[in-house]
Length: 274
Image (cartoon, rainbow, N blue to C red; front, side, top):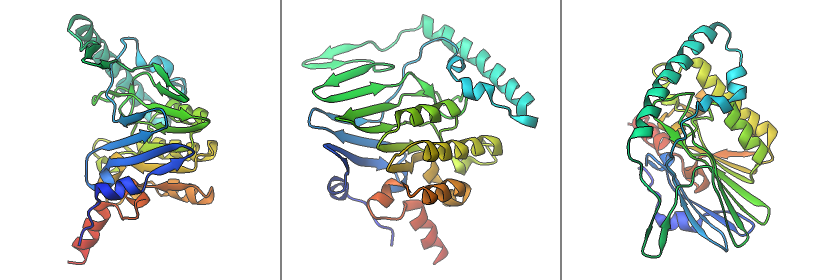
C-alpha cells in the first residue's frame, strides 16, 4: 500500500528555526513535479516557487569557478558546448530585446513586482532574490531560475530553485557563503543519466553538494525535486549521503522529513513485492 501525504501532516510538521516556520508544500518525493515551500515569519508569509526574468549579458561572465575548471579529456567538447550555448543565447537575447515583457503592475491593493536580484525588508525579515541562474548546467535550454534567501533575527533559510545539484560550482559557493540554517536544495536529475546527463556533470553535482556539506554548518538539507524521479537516487549520489553522515548532517527528502519513504521508493518496493 502506497502512503499518501495529507495537507494536515504538512501543516503539523514544519521545519522550525527560531521564529521561522518552513512548510514543505509539494515535492517530487510526494509524487508532485514540484519543490514548493511556504515560509512564515512574524512579519510575512511567503509562498515560494519562483520564475525568472533574464538580463541580456553573457551569463557565464559571473561563473568564474565553472569557467576556470579543468575538464581534462572533456575540455574540447565542453568548449564547443559553451560556444554553441553563447550563440543560442545571443539569438534569444535579440528576441527578448524586441518583444514584449510582462510588466510590473498593481491589482487592487496588491503590487506585482519582478524580484530578480532584488531585496525586500518587512519588519525584522529580510528577503533576498538572486539574479537569474541556469536551470542545471551552463546554457541549459530549460531556462533560468531565481533562488531566494529569507532571514529573520539571524536565522536563515535558502531555497535554491532548480539548480539540479547544484551543477555549477559558483552556485555551490553562493550557498557556502550564505551558510543557511536550512537549505531547500534541488538534486541532480539522475533519472536522465546516460541520456541528457553525462558522468562528468553528474560528478560535478555530487562534488558540489559535498562542498556544501563541508563548507557550511547547515543543520537540515531538504534534497529533493529532480533527484526524486529515480528509484536509485541514493545509489547515484551515494558519496553525498556518506559525507552527510560523516558530518552528522540531515540530508533528506521532504517526504522523509514528514516520516515517509519517498513515493518512488514505495512504488518500486511494491512492484518488487508483487
